[in-house]
Image (cartoon, rainbow, N blue to C red):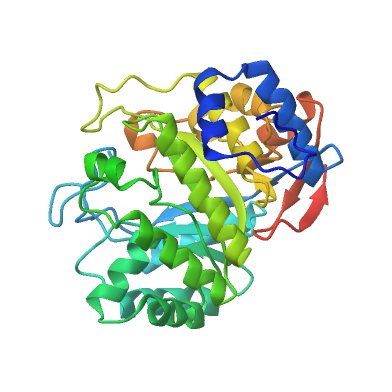
Length: 351
């Protein structure tokens, strides 16, 4: 099928697989750029100033691709104390931050009341901060441990101060893949159910994909199709973020990492396929600033976040650290106009 971003015809899963396997990289970039400009006609590239706060690293899932988790009671395991949590938020606000990304592991010692109290505590002391927190696996775990439905658990967390939900825990939405790399984690249908219920409650979320482990192009196409279908139903996804698996220090460390070409190909096909998701983020965290600049010509319109702190990818041995000034200069050098945004992609200021 000949596909144009300006055509009313949607790209099919079959065509997505073909493009992932055999599509010309430069042609994909050209088409993805056209698709991006259907959403974003100008030269603005956005970013958000935030911090990833991992409130605990204890997790019962023990995913094979994760180098961050620790078993309960193991050396290096922790639960973040209130004072340290507040210091991290204060520093974020002092640096112009508007959001914290609050995530941890599935810690059996922390029930939903702990999380509700933490959310209330943050909002009472820092009412302006947007709490973008808890991935679908965490929310499913809170609900299960408290004998609640997903909707009930989300309602309690929202009422306590949770504003929006990140797309973590998706990896690839193929249960075959999930069985291979994270057999204890929730299934694809459960991840989608959390997002559906969050959207029905008026919450906005992002969607992600971690590729480059054991998946096939068919699995990637199925993942994109699931996101597009749910977006068609709810309209609740603000952005999609594809990023490549970093095998260092993990049980899958012998996996050959995805290349820069692989990344650009997946990014461009994502932009083409997700014709109802307005924003695509570049991943400087895994690719570095130079490749993120190239990504802005392959369908990405957003530079993600400053990530004042990031621990999960860094634990796999990949640690690109940049300041807000670094991001601003990188966007300018790529030929675009930088703009700081909030969680819902409202522009706060231009540079």
